[in-house]
Image 1 (cartoon, one colour):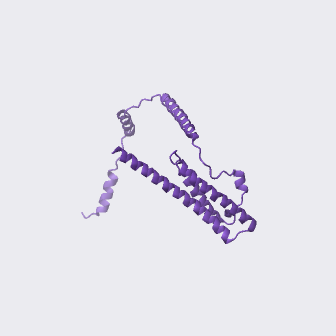
Image 2 (tube, one colour):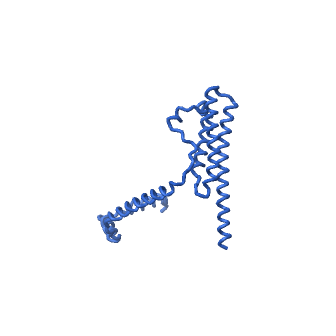
Image 3 (cartoon, helix red, strand yellow):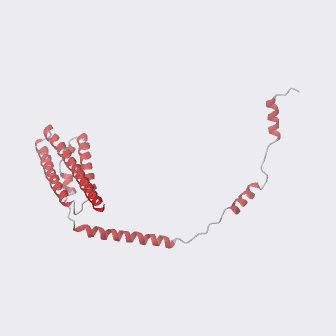
Amino acid sequence: MEQDLREMFKKDREEQRHTIKHGHEERFLKKLEESTPVQKKTDKGWLKIAASVAVIISIGLGFLYFNKNADNKTTVVDNINTEEQKSEFTFGDLSPDLKKVESYYVANINLELAKLEVSPDTKELIDSFMEQLNNLNIEYKTLNIELKELGPNDQTITALIENLQLRLQLLQKLKRKLNELKLSKNEQIIDNSI
């Protein structure tokens, strides 16, 4: 009478092997297909045409908008041709570390320039800052020529880095002034509406 429980369960499992009845899977798939709703295929060709027309219209309106604002003359700070820029010697050509420094400042300067929003109200302020920036750019080119002719020295390299820092600081100052001007105009609008 004494039986090992493990052997008893093992025998029981072997006797009760469950199998799926023949054709069960096919019946299940058939019922599943019947219960899911059938989606109708719709012709979405007109939707594609409408989207294309919307894109073309928005491009046309954007083109008209930018041409309308083209009468606002903006000052270009750096108008060096790419061929001149490739042949021009910069202090970044001296070492990879100096190249990283130069690239960092030039990228940030270009980023700040791209963020500027020129409007008729701010045009005069921006033009005055751009004139200062252009003077710093001319000085930067002069320092690069000096570096090329005299060779690398600490004073020239420091002056070049400070020039880049000064240009970036100048653009950040312009950005702060524009924000202050924008805030003061918003306050005036609020005061006038009250």
